[in-house]
Length: 362
Image (cartoon, rainbow, N blue to C red; front, side, top):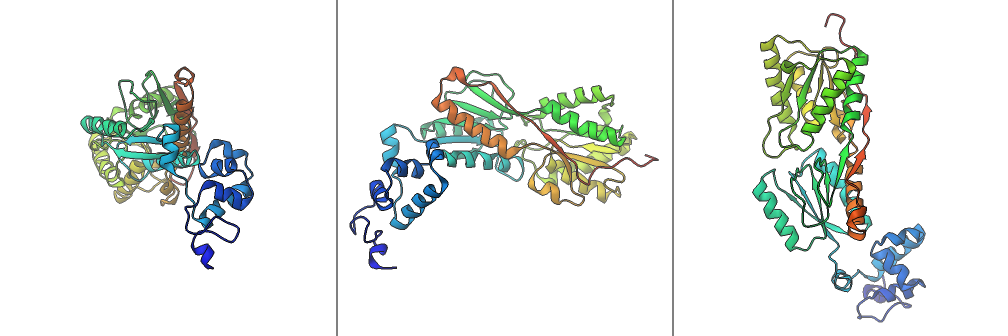
């Protein structure tokens, strides 16, 4: 590479030693400064620019050493282009899937986000809310975080179930999810089904359990209290580990043995608890799915790689995060009265190897 390129310019580029400006990149490419600005600032309007032109702009900017001046952009528009994200904690499964969708959408729109885990502690939630507000975030995305009162900033809640002014809830259709999972088990011939209910801290626990009760009644399935265990967990809420599912699985098995209530299938609150329970049941001498069929919920990345692979209700976590971010950005540019109260996402049952008809002597 010659001296001119080392200084961030070529023979037709800007003067050596001077800062590279947006109009220098535009002149270098023979494009308008507006076109280069739209591409470099990831403006939604850039979608109308051909992909090969966008690639040329980014390549030239990298070659010449140009980067957008974020501070100047913020001052000029009097905006921070920042969003706050609050969730119980960042861990494998639910949170990681939703955050991936949020990040992809915000990056595409030229925003960045600040994320904090409140561990379902009200005082920590309040502290983080204040800190994010002091850092001038324009809006908030809350993930699996129940709230009782409206917030001072535009907000979208993933797994939200409260009708609050200025808040849009992105929710899975729990009725459809419960119906799909239980209909699958019923069609295989299962009548004695055990359940893992969610943590008390999880925003989805109540809605999902009510949906399970309704679907069971519709399908003529009995919900036996002796076959129902509510995951205890800690204050982290939704994000519990496979070890907890494993531990709860042993407790669950002991309770069933004590109650003398046989079962041929388990419908777990999510994949993490289902995976842990599968291990516990196997170590107790039960074969999956020969002796017990297991259905999870979420379809996290590792669900397909279990042995056997896990049948589960796919909750499109990435899409839920992306829709939440897109709706929040729409709120920031549209009147509050135009915001929908709910965005409902449809689930899909993914049938794998952890479910099969019960044994004839079950």
